[in-house]
Structure formats: C-alpha cells, structure tokens
Length: 558
Image (cartoon, rainbow, N blue to C red; front, side, top):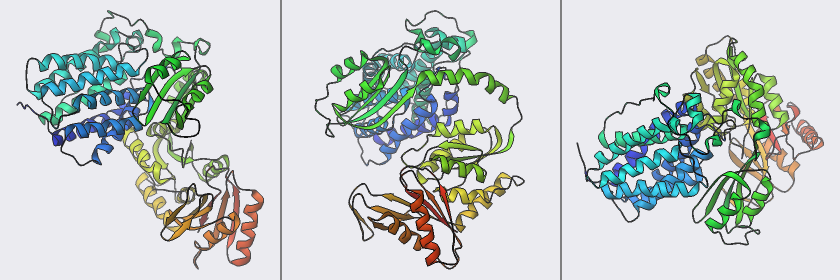
C-alpha cells in the first residue's frame, strides 16, 4: 500500500486517530512520570492539550492542509497544559509552519513539517535535555528528511518516522540516568509516539501494536550532561532545590495599562533565563506562554506585565510539594495495603463552608474548585485515587466540570459514575439519594432522580453590559440565575436576591436554603430569609455560611 499525497480529509483523520490513541493511553503515559515535583501528569496534560487542538480543527471548514495545521497549532497553544503540553504545542506550531502554502502534503512537504516542528520546539526550551520528548521528535524528524530523499510514498515515510520514534523512545533511559533507575522510558516521548502511531494507523487503516520497551534489557551508554533535570523524590532534598517556585503565566500581548514594551522573543527569553531555570517560552502574535522555575515569582509576573495583560497565573511552591511527597510516601504505602472503602463520593466545591456542607451530607473527598477554578481531569483522577474506594461517585457541581469528570471516570480502574450536577444545590440534593447498601447503578438512578426535586439559584455580578432574552444588564449589577438562566438583574443585592427566589417558588415548594459567600454578609442573608418568611408563611428558610467566591449566594428551593 502506498500513496503520494495527504489531502485535508486524510490529515483530519490522522489527527482524530492520534487524538484517540493519546486519550486511550493517557493513564499509561502518566504512570511513566518520574518528576519529584510534577507540573502535572504528562499523559493527561498531553491528551488535554491535543484535544484542544483537535477541537479547534473541528471548527474549521477548509480543504487545505496548511489551514488545518494552523488551527491545530492555535488550539494547542491556548490549551497547552504542563511542560509536555507546551512542548507538544510547539512541535505542531513548527509543523504548521512547514505546511504553509500546501493544500496537500507530498513526502517532501511532510518531512519538512516534521523538521520545522523540531526547530520550533527546541527554540522554545531554553536548555533542552536529551532523553526527552525533544529527542524522540528530533530523531524522528531527521529520519523523515532522509526518507523523503529516497521515496515519494508518504505512508513509507510515516512508517519510518514511527519506527525511528520508537527506537529513540527505547533509548531514552540511556540518556537520562533516572529513567534507567526507575525503569521507565520518557513519558513525553511515549506520548508523542502514540500520536505518531495514530498518524500511521489513519494512513494505513491498520491497527499498530504498541510495544513497551523492556527497560531492564537496556544498557546505560550515555548520560545527559544535565541528568538532574529530572530527579526522583528520593534523590533530592527540598533544600537542594535552587529555584523553589514553579511559575507559569499566559500574557495577552499589547493589552492592558501595563503593556509598555514591544515583545521580542530573544530579549524576553534571555531575561527570564537569568532569573531561574527550566524555562519554556512559546508565543504567537497574540499570546506568550511562560513556564519557569524561579526564587522570586513576582519578578517574572512584573516583567510579563510590561508586554501585556496576564490572562492566567499559576505559582507552585515546589519545596513544600516535595516535602509533602516525602512525608506521604510511607503513609501512601501503608494505605495501599489497607482495604478499600465500599464507596467514595467525590464532590467539587469552593469555600470552606460549602465544603463542610458537602462533607456533612456524605461526600468523602472534596476537590477545591468551581466556577473560574475548573479542576482538570488529572485533579479528579487524583481525588479518585485518594478516595481509596471500590466504587466512585463524582459530583462535578458545575457544567464546565462535567466532561473532565466523565473523562476521569473512564480512565480509572475502578467502577465510577458521574451524577450530572451543575450546581452546589444539586450536589447537596443528589447526596440525599445515596444509599451505601445499593449498587452503583441503583445509586446513579436514585441520585439523578433527586435532581428533579430542587430548583437551583445563584447570585453574582455582571462584568459587562449586555442584553439577554430582552433583559438588560449593566456592568456591576447583580444577576439572579435560576437553573442556568439569567432571570433578574439589579443594583440592590438584597432586593435582587428576593426577586430571584420569588421566581423559584411555586405551590409545591417548602424549603429555601441560602448559602452566603465571601462577598455577602451573614446579616444580609438572615434579612433576606426573614423577608421571605414574611412573604411566604408556609416556607421554611435555612441560612448557612458557604464562603464561596464569585457567587454572593447559592440558593436551593425544594
């Protein structure tokens, strides 16, 4: 079987199959991680990053390969998570550059795309380390170039690229000592091989068997000069971490009042490289994404603001994380030998009061998160592991967390279900339907049925002027939201809250629960409850401290 051209539809199919391959094997790639203080599980990060790129591809209608590649690169850049996701985004940013001007790809253009991807990715990492995803990409790219000089068959080229990537991956323990010690290949390189496997499967229509290298049979022939770029937790003490804060930021170029300087990649990267190590800088015309380990994260953030607005910021204290890893090693091993609980109920919630309410209602594990703080699939998988239970029930309590919860439920080993709760009120109500003596399927049915008994409301503020379904909303006004729909707005918080609750009450309702957030006063919450009891004598009201951000009040009417 041979072919000389890859057209737009074939390329889309290659991306879809690669995306599925990476998603299916994300958990396996995660298992290869050996970082002492990981930015995140590599498989999950690569998978979610690539999914973001493929989602962007699905949104474009074109018969040109170069336009598809550009969409992929854009989606990957904005969706990149962790080091591996950022490097992956740069590989395909360069790949897209190599595709420019081509509506189809012949062997020469295909090889050029691989080669350009390697160039851009190496440029993004200030101090590249061999024995990583970069090595796998580079050796595969070199093979692509050589193969394109000998054949015009794109399938033969992809087969050679895949084989070369496999060999490079198997050799990574010879380049990084810690991989050999732990007995794994490089996780990022493995993720990239799964992508290339998907490419080859799409072109040939054949299922490619995955081969996990036998690490014990490999010999250490060469160690990277910077082998302690990766260290296992037992090989390094927290006081030996030179730069203690993993700092990440996404800058919207030329936006905001602090944007005073024009962005230059080399100047920008060189400055940050003087502040720390493990630097990765990627950019396009609109965004700059930065990952760096430093001792003073404020210096990085202040410098970034010179070029635009900070869209996202993340700072992790690696010394504390490392100490926690060491402290937990013994207890984790002990717990692993203990019998699992029959059920683990995982709830996503923000605010100390809300989290305590969830626990008192029966949740066994809480993930801190919610609106504007959506936990990743990785976070949910970790919570499932921490629950140490035979069967898992997940309450996302937010529509934006539902898909990540479903993905987490699919990748874990134990049976897990997701109750489609879209609010804290629904989450608390769903817990009323749980019965530890019933099967997972019966609990799913009962807990989901409970959602029909509650009307959920939230009160928050508007961040811009808008008009929705004829309702005019001014920036700064409060909004009443009922089961996902904005039903009222106004400048007086108490009046707006009472108006919203009135829209939630009918003749069948008996109880109103008000949970006040960090931006609401307890006295105001009780004043609202008193006003409701006066207006609706048959209604019982309950008031709780939630402490949640973003929302002044969570309201449930049952």
